[in-house]
Image (cartoon, helix red, strand yellow):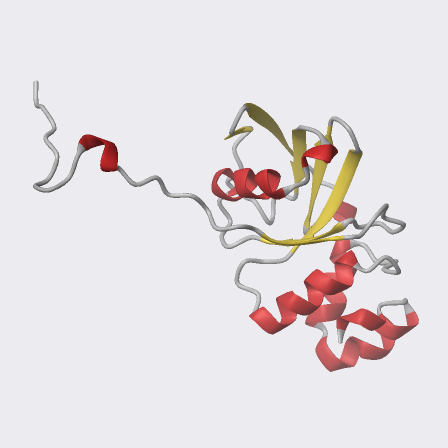
Length: 169
């Protein structure tokens, strides 16, 4: 049996633990009045890495996140369960078009939260606008519609304005 010895000048207790950076997250202040409760811009498409950081950044008053529902197109390799500090979160996949580009968090205290999931490779400027627009209390748009309008660029600006999305520009 091999034994592991620490490198010269180190102790066994000097191991480094990697922690995901704080999530890029914007939540609707107070109670949401629209189809979205905010937006999340993950750094990669590995839900098992990203979800613990997202859940850990939420106010403890929301309660324990017990289940999430994700879009299989956004999270093709999502596991059925994700370990977070203190508990396991069940992961379900939704086939509904209305839930594309979204993650739904089922919380023990506050009920359900739906967040726009901004693609990890989205340019920073566009992602910042999407984070703000999705968390706007006046936002009437669903996750797929916000992304559709954002991707249409200047051609979608009139449509965006007519649907109440003035905050995306």
